[in-house]
Image (cartoon, rainbow, N blue to C red; front, side, top):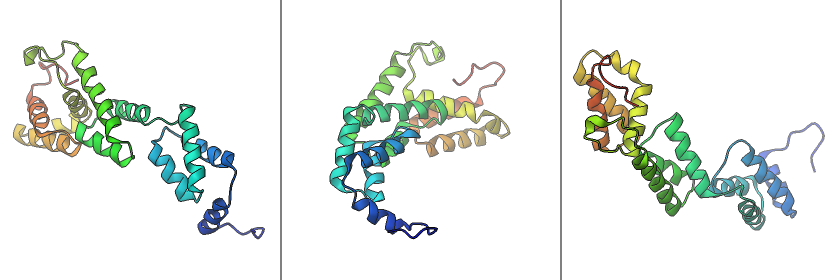
Length: 199
């Protein structure tokens, strides 16, 4: 029992939660964790078991959240990929690693990344006519968006060779494969006045 005016320690909180046998309490804790943003099943499991809740109640809460559609690894992975492509472009390798760290299973990752590739292949904007009409890959589109975001800092590099090297390094750090890095970094040398935008 807590003494008035004294804060409960982490160990005491965990011990108190271990005695809880009401599934609704664990379900409510899981729902609160999901309020800020969507999470993977593994993240919710890790959070609840780390907080001290009993494993059987944690699994029950996860099953219930999945039934309600509030917890879905494929939907989580899709949202993660869309967010990355929109706000912080990454290559497929980096996205795959991030999703694995979030605990998303490989089949879900494979499915979502295949959808990403299919969406890029079906997006016929005509923006890459100089490539002989070839449709750019999802990674290439993301790489171009990333370089567009960093265009000003790259333009400050006077030597074209160094500018390409910096662009290549930036792309490589963000999980793009060497071929994509090479192809997209080479486009940095185009004169901005007569070249079309990277994205």
